[in-house]
Length: 411
Image (cartoon, rainbow, N blue to C red; front, side):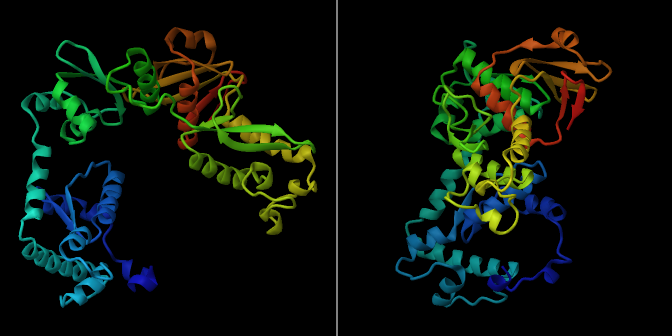
């Protein structure tokens, strides 16, 4: 980045933090369409930074790269620097905010003059109606909370046409009602009311959403994939007695340790696991070779790949990974956020089977199955619910888990 832009760490030392300028960005872009060179990149950065502040920043964008290719065809390069030089547009402080912004403004003005058919303006005008909400939609949104939970979109006769979950129900419904996607347009046309269930916990919302969709089969949820995951982690013992791990396509006939939304997610998990548990790349399917793995070469593998480390020693670490990521045959309860500050949610796993969930007051002790049975609402155990729970636990490392077998608590 230093070679590309000339910007180094010393130059950024006194630069303002994003949260310090976020409010000003919202103010100066209010009611505007964001124009940028390679707008997708800049807009993605803005969205990401605002998301870290729990703010949903949504704007229409116009990209001067795309517009230039359409209105100024035939140039070898459409990078900002080369394009403005070729067009004779003066630019100062290249790769600095002010210099690049002013060059983009001058380029955009040129594009507006070249746009004799007023395509840009027509496209811009066409974008505006997206944000015009119908009065009934405004009333619905105003009645909703900015809370985590499951929501149900109903037709006039009460039929549920869509079920979803969100960490901010009000914001999510607003997105449904302002989107111009074909499916969203159909939902907008039929939506008459929205009901919701506050869950506090995103895990509870995910589990309830999955079960409610299966039970109600809303018309606009039917296009969703039948399963939430495509790949799984399996184990087998090789001829030398070592436990091998493998990411493969999910197969309901085989017992999986854990599951993943896609192969990439599984591979990413395995790379981290190899480092954390000091496992062999060869025996985890990450390095195909008939001899030693690469990590052995750089002295970070104990040599299970060439039988230097004993199976007993190596398998202990593999088993730790398996025990951590599979709740097979375990009795445990997962404690997460509740609907109020003095409440928590409880997800019960009994004998490795998801039994259901409930809520309890912080002053209420839940340390045995008998007590739990009184607060738990039974739910279906299936491959999707198992995937939801395992994925959530992987992403939320600090979540509280009570092992009912040994009555211990971990995070």
